Amino acid sequence: MPRPAIHLFKPRLLLVAAFGLLLAGCDIPGLGPDPRIAQREAEAQAIGAACRHAQRSLEDCYTLNPKAPKAAIFAGWKDMDQYMRDNKIEGIPPQLSKSIPPANGEAGGNTEAPPAADAASKS
Image 1: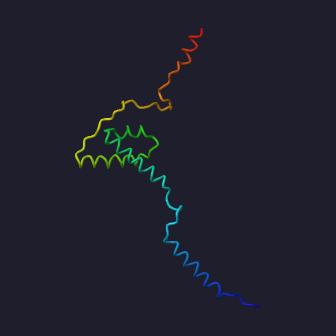
Image 2: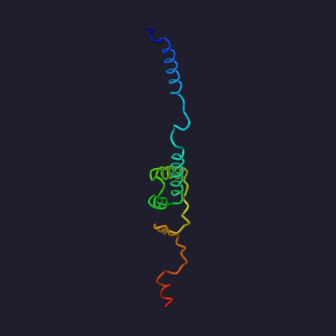
Image 3: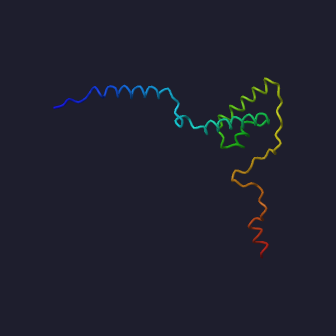
């Protein structure tokens, strides 16, 4: 009965172990964090900084940007606040009206007559 060739497995095992150690120190593309998450956080921080510069409160900023992460908005607002205090920069008052857009998705530019007025005009 022939004996198994154990001496052939040792070099392969060492080769696999060495290859594994080499890959452990590499950054393999596609396995890291999603870059869209970092972009979303950066945009939310920019929104917060813009709100602070426009003298908007955090609550207004949260209401105007419901999809942006609140923690990132706050971080941007706080960073801009510190920057403005350090450099003695005055904020710019917001140019938009104080009214908040309707939450039901209507743009407010509805030029059609309401259905009740339509029915009354036909009779």
